[in-house]
Image 1 (cartoon, rainbow, N blue to C red):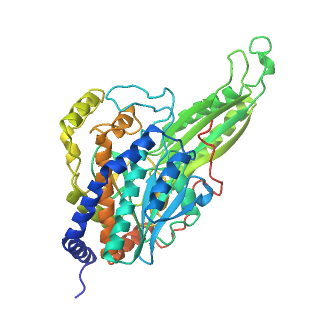
Image 2 (cartoon, rainbow, N blue to C red; image 1 turned 30 degrees about the horizontal axis):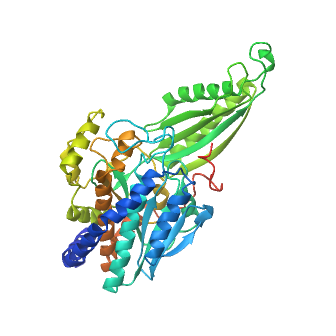
Image 3 (cartoon, rainbow, N blue to C red; image 1 turned 60 degrees about the vertical axis):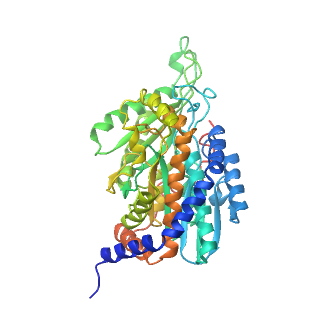
Length: 475
């Protein structure tokens, strides 16, 4: 009598966990021995943050480390100078690990528990991508070492993925077919807790709307001018009225990136940067089309000209329950983040600045395995619709810390961040080991993937056929 699929998977997972304990203990010990080395790399990236598509030094540093470890590097993939792949081994299965490394503008912060910019106005690692790239690299190297020592066949591939923060770097890599031969992807992200939930998030489209008018003296000849800023403000007013007539959980964000040069000059040029989010990519496209109509209407009403450019677009994440279960089991084996007395004092000071702090001891805990609906967006979504993917979060920030905050930057430059990074590295390395050791696990992972994606799925990037927006952070 044929066993139910879930029971079969459970037996395979238990078998892999039981008979691989010796190998897993060795991987954990090896990564513990290299913690200071990887912490130094992460701190160097943290100290020298680079924005999306401009991560020249960071990308080169990670490539150099992987090349020293015997990986074959392919640089400048998908038409992106800072994107790369690093591959070791041959044959099946092919297991991928994602690594991000871009920073956020204007988020400079020192590694202290109070607000203090390292360099005022400069970028900072407010989403922990310095830990993300380094920790993923550490996991890839550990998985490579396992392949060598065990004699198992298979391929481990690290993906150096730039410009996650609004640049949709992975989308271009998906579009270029770089994930076509991959059996499964393991990934992670910095956070304030340790979890391995099968989760989804919000799809997104982002773009810049540029209005062009006629400049004139704002006092002596205002009737001769046509304000591009009026076009932007008119568009914003129309979009704000649109909010009432959208479905949940639609999110519309904007920032005026150019508004003119002086108040006594009617602005000839103005620009506004929009981001649209929803849990379904089809609805995102529909809302985007309505926002474009608002821009067109504003241009007509202000007698200005309008052009727009889609900068990025990402799918909602496709969960994979079997792969999440593997990663959850390994995270429980690894354990959470242990704080020293110094860490606790730092955390207490940080928590004084937080609106909703969580218990400090929760950094040691592994959250229960349960489905979660995220409210953020990421270009890992496009990867997940092309290759089975699961991701964990690790407590690299003081519990209660939100992403994109100075508190996240501060903790990411301390041992709290580095300890969390190593929790993630161990979890990913052990999960890759399970897949190499017992490739039958991939059958259930693939079945779940096919079931959720559907037989008729055809991938079409939300950003269309445009080339990578390599200059989106330059202005």
